[in-house]
Structure formats: structure tokens, C-alpha cells
Amino acid sequence: MISVIEYYARALTKSKASLISFAVRPLSFIFLLTVVSGGKLFPTALIGGMISFVAGVGIADLAIEIAGMKTRSKFYDILSTLPVHPLKLGLGISIGMSIPALPYLVSLIVALTYVRGLSLLRIAQIVFLLAFLWLWSVFVGLYVGVKLREPIVIMRVSNITLTALTVFAPVYYPIEVLPSFVQRAVLLLPTVSCAYLIRSLYEPLSEWKTALASLTLWTLFFGVLAFRDGIFKEE
Image 1: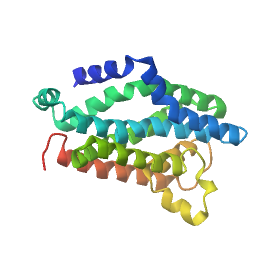
Image 2: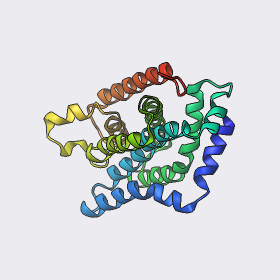
Image 3: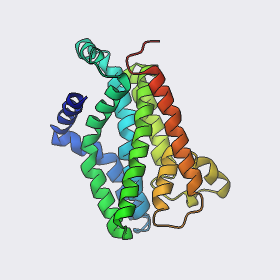
Image 4: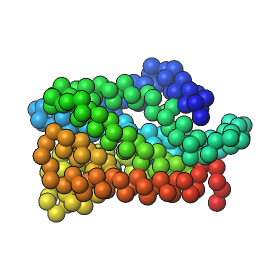
């Protein structure tokens, strides 16, 4: 498992161009929202960037990689014979693929800490919430990678899903922008609930319990699906 982590971490950090392209989308949204809002949405934009980095690793990158492994037969055969449970192997791959996002996440957390004057306890809680969301996204990636299989299909589905959950949903911007009758519904989305929980660490938000329950239930649900199917289990 450690070898798998090292393999993916090295493969994804070799090229500086790939590291920059990896960050273009989240950072561009942070820049645009900050400029358009005159700086008012800078804190929520930072949270949106964190959510995008974390969710993108599982929903998009991991799902595509799992499907792509099966087209590289030798690599697939080696991984499938390792004495490691498929779920642990998937976690190892996702950890390695997540390493390029760490510098960006640290920068965004530091920026939010500076803007909002967060304590060490609040920082630790943000890290915990992001880890929780990361676990959910990994479970989604494992499940989608098995069910859809074809890389081109997964690329389209994952990009649509990621965009819907991080761009159109109130992740980069506050949920209060939406009509009141819509807020409760979108709060049930895991990315929205995570963003809401992070905001609740420095703002008095009343629905944090609903958000926490939503994030927990979604993680458990997809965890069961990922554990049941595994990476290498055939239909």
C-alpha cells in the first residue's frame, strides 16, 4: 500500500506544468468571485477551493484511474495480485493522488485562518471535515470506477458531477444567496454540507447538525457500496 502511495505521488508531482494545471480551476474561481464581490466572498471562495481540491481527487481522478488501470493489463495484473484488500488499495491510490493537492490546501487553510482569525482547534476541525469529505469522494470514485468502467464515460460523468457539486452548488458562495425553500434541499449535498460546516466554525449557522448528519450518512452509504463491490470485483 505504501509503495502504491509513493508511485502515484511521484508520478503526479514530476511535472510542474501538471501541478499548475491541477490548480487552475479552483484558484480561478477563487480569483473571479473575490474580484466580482469586491472581496466579500473571499472566505467562502477559499472554502470552495478546498472542497474542489478534495472532492476532485475521488470523484474525478480516482474513478478515471481505476477504469484506466484495466486497459493497462500488466499494471492491473500486478495490483490485483497484491495481498491487500481492494478497498485499502483504493485508499492507497487515492492518498498518492491527493498529495499534489496538499500544498494548495495548506495555503487555502492558512489564508482562511488569517482572514477569520481561526484558532488551532478550528484549524484542526477544518482538517477533520476535509478528511471526512475526502473519504466520501474516495468511496464515490471507487464505486463509479467499478460500475462505469469506460474511462471516456467516467470522464464525462465525473466532470458533470464535480461541476454540479462544487460550482453550481453553494460551495464557493454562501448558501444564503439561494431562496430559502431551496437551501434545506441543497444542504443535503455532501459538498455543500462540508462547506456549511466549515463556515459554522466562524459564523453562527443554525443548520450545522443537519449538515453534519448529511455528510456522515453520505460517507457511510458510499463506503458500504465501495466495500461491497471493491475495485477488482467483476459484475
